[in-house]
Image (tube, rainbow, N blue to C red; front, side):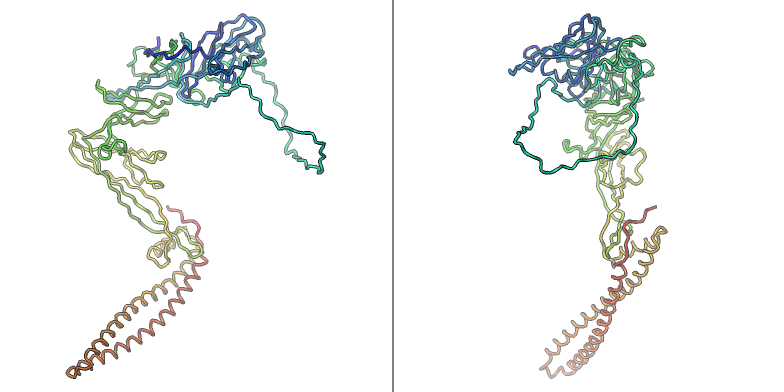
Length: 615
């Protein structure tokens, strides 16, 4: 018997008729997905040339769009017919409609599959952590609201949601058509036709399939676990005859479970291992096949154990500030960390964490592919405190782009995030820091064991803090930044010198830059001299104005004749120096203007569209 827990559901309203019923074809298999549909299979021996299905009107579309029929010895289905009553009442959708499937002959071993609406199944997890790792238990909660009891059915749960839509094939659709009137018009212009020339000789048609009917039927048998959502009725191509009747259920290799050849090694915590589900992969989706039959009465739910398996796991701390938990800005979370080694996908669901016989807390596990690791918070760790600060600086300079006389340089921006970790407990703390990654930056020299999760824009950085101590953790990131910069700036000189020293530099561009840099040297020299002489000129002019003011103040003072003489002599000397400075400034301006024009013309023809590759 399958490990299961019955969960009673309170029925509300009137009883709902089953989506599909068929005399002589009891329900044998149920497959529940995560998208609001279920696949149902009915099988049995029919001694008649027809089978009548009673289908709820709101389920007719799904039934017709997904109906798949398997018969031992080949298919003998002729057609499926259903009436179209013009019932438009409010409860018309739940009324039953008869679909008649016509068969050839009067004896048939049939297996019929179809999809119908069904509540999604929901997972629930238990993680028991010990010194050697952890045991992961997965339970599935299945709800039966189908309108009929599922008695001793084969139950499978699919841990993904394939595309499924309401085809509404049972609804009458008459699209509007354009109306044409005959007014006796004459076409006055001959339209142009289109001709497509042959490109190659057409390939001969493929030979008819040589597969035996048994092989065709075996392919249909896969529909009992992988329903064809867009399938239809079986035709007459697979006729009875050769090869003998195929099995009604196709076998599949188990990928990671307890099935034959699966080689699964469970933890032994579940006493009846044969009751655990077999995990298999079906078209890339994870499927849990329960080992034994299950009974789920209508309007009730059942919780079944899907697996109990040893996995790598531990309880540690995670610093990941969450706006919804203000204290997490300074205190890390307690987390359960485990790796999915089940062989299949674990869907999103609640996770209860236990250790040393005690309940630690609950968390929510996100969808976890096989081989991936989950870090699930379940409490706040107040014995640990974390502070952080960030510094940014720029280093180096290199030529990034030159065109139309404009220079763009690239610099290396270094971002240092420093975490201060304080452990107030009397035991060593093992900690993960969820570091928010800088967009476009790269980690440089991260600590061993760092998990750089590019898709989430974060990195999990490990750290250990001894008991009652404070430690530091530094995360370094680099990214390239570009700046449009003046050719006369020191950073421009650094970038060009780095380009000229690079062995990968373009020889022609390097020659142009060297020639331009000679003009730049002369221009800078003239500019520096101009600034120096300009400062002297300004100081001397202030001094002469001061001397003139002093002379005016002593103009009528006969006792200060000697002082006036000295000031007059100084004023004459300063005027002569000003005249000399003025002439030199004119000469420098002429020279610097010439060098500026020469430099501008020299850089105008330089083109660097891509930076040199960094080694």
